[in-house]
Image 1: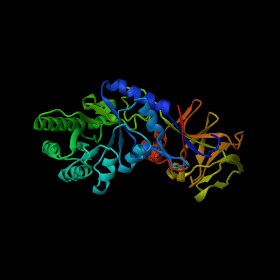
Image 2: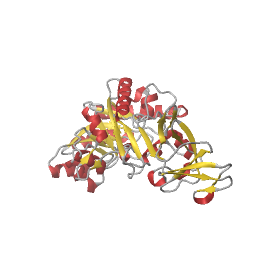
Image 3: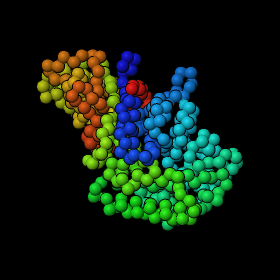
Image 4: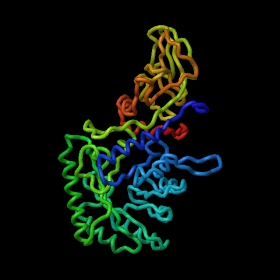
Length: 382
């Protein structure tokens, strides 16, 4: 795209179609889209030269009622959405620190509580502001990060119910290995523990809970019993299924695009890039691409990845450096300066996914996408 050496193209139409396919699968359940970690690398908010904050992805989805909720990891992420004019409900998916509570409540974020301390702190902050605040109680059924023990859930729900200015709107949990058939017994135990906790809560309160939710992407794909009232498809919505049992068709939303900035001839036996890790096996033409690990194109991909140029695949060679990588074009190539290079995405019949790069780098698609640096502009289409 004119004006950018390297950019991430985000197809909002594809994201909307993915969410629509997920909604059809889970029927009447609400959808919460996690937009933490810069919306999984797809871009949470932007600031214009005038200082105005915009949220192209979230606003696009909100205006089309494509999601019912957004989920964030930090108070700052939620505040940025509100600053961009997003009014859709936003759940902070873990407990806020005491010093963050005022800002979170003023922004109208829905808080997570996990124990008496977080309940009392949220209640005190809400009372000080005179602002009733919705909270969700997180139950730890096996992930062992945050959340209350299932046997204490009913007591904590009662405490929340009695706390001034708090409304217990939801109860949720998170799965540890819902994508793995070998762990289905563990997932089933998590579901059973959550069911028992919900029954105890509703019995103790004498009322139902408006939003019960547990299903991440893998559970949306494989565990209908975990769909409850709302599902939280993250990586699935962005186009990457987590199991081989995919009931819905989704397409990757993000492409990482650059261009050829330089072409040179490398003679047989010569080396390229830092560390001299690649030796040319023959006379060849090598292209320089202005993207490196400073942009999120991982060093671990060195001498392993490939790129697409003009519908053909070419191997990346030599060490990936902070700002550049090199591609072996072959001796007969006519690729020239200025041609588009696709590092993630589709070019003709060739396609490279974040999951493909994750396998090569010994990591997961999440890290590849979330690792795309802020200095890489996000360009929205669709």
